[in-house]
Structure formats: structure tokens, C-alpha cells
Image 1 (cartoon, rainbow, N blue to C red):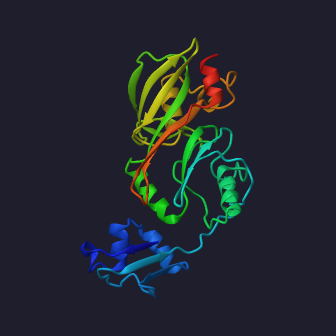
Image 2: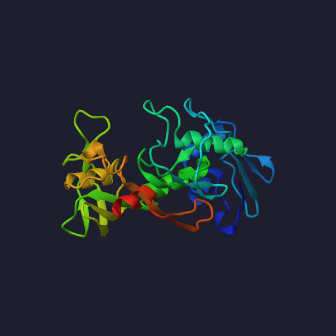
Length: 292
């Protein structure tokens, strides 16, 4: 990556420029300095304490990224919605985990993306920005390198990475549009389940009923916060669990996974600063369920 130093940034040392102007995190700068990256000005290697002058060409080369022990490339079909040098957006299928774990050590989206990178000679590991549960489908944002990931992670923490979901719940809601404001925390005795509890972290979910069948309702859902299992927990707590979500009390007779699909994603591109906006249709199995 290269930048030409302008008048307003003269006198800054490289560390200050990278942090203040280019939004590099301290960890990213540390990785460049200590893990084999390179910083140069006008073609000559420099330390992060070098003071920049107008017209200087600052160049940063990232070190080769290390892969975790479970990050084994595995060939699998990926539905790529968008790709450039910095980000990758896929339409994740249901019934596949996002990253390896003790329960799902292989066959995850991360394994498939790593195979895709290696097959296309891309020197990256996998940086998931918007993780989806195993049985949730839809748009997923992946940063290709440490720099874009550090920016997008900060944007997500600030609430600037926005997602909308289609969800099918059991039954019907009295209020067809509303907000659920109920804190969520871990359920006692479980390392997986969450529950609404006064001791939990703030969690706010906005919803709008789009369509109703005899036994189900299709919702448009937008999260103000991003707690683990938030949509699933909030609607289960109302007595209307996500269809197919047996972890939170729903039947699996009509659909074999939780009927939850991320259909819309928007964010500011980490490098170009352009607002990116993507929308895809709801998942086929969910469309069939609400119209059955």
C-alpha cells in the first residue's frame, strides 16, 4: 500500500500517520514491525518514528499471514456476491459452520475460503467480520487482510456495519411492528444457550411483520446490538421461536434448520470509503415454508 504525504500531514511520524489518517490499529502496526513486514519512504526502509514531509511516498508491505492449526484448505462451493482486493462477500448456505471449532473442526466456511484463496494465489488467511450461526444463511462479510479487518471490526463495534434479516417465527405477533429491548446473557448450566436476563448485556431488536401464513410469520429484522443468538433468543422469549430452531423451543417438522437469513448488508469500504450496499432474495427453503 502506498500514499503520497500531503500538506496537512507533514510533520507526523509514520506511526501517527498510520493510526490517525489510515486507521491502522496498534496491533496491525505491531505485526508489520515485528512479523516480517516493511515500511519505507521513497524506497528506503524507515522506522515508525520517521517524520514525514510533503511529497514523501510512504509504502507499507504486510507480513505473510499465519494460519491457525485448524485452518486447512478444503474445496467447497462458495456463492461469491462481491470481491475486490480488500473484502469478500459470500451468500452463506445453511447447515455449515462459519469457523472451525471442537464441534466442527473442518468443513466450515473458513476452510472453503482458504482453499479459494490458495487456488487463486491470494496470500491471505480468513478474517470473518460478520459471523453467522451454522444454520443461518445469507450475506457474510469477510476481510481479506489485517488492515481491512481492523477497520471493519472498528466500524462494526461502532454500529456502522448494518445487516437486515428475514426470519420466520412460529405463530403470530400481536404488534406487527415493534422493538424488543431485553438484555441477553448466558443461560446457567450451558456454554451454548443464551437467555433474557436482567444481568445480561443490552440487546435491542427491531422487527416488522411482512407476511403471515396459518401457523408462521415472516419478519424483517434489524439489530441495534449484536449479541450472540440475539434474534433467536428475543423471539423465543416472546413465545414465538424461530421456526426450526429446536435449541430455543421450535419444532423441526416444517424446516430442518432455523429459518433465519441475512438478506441485506451495508458498510463503508475500508479503503475507498464508498458505502457498499448488497441485497439478495430470501432463502429458497424459507420462501417455501411461508407460502406452504
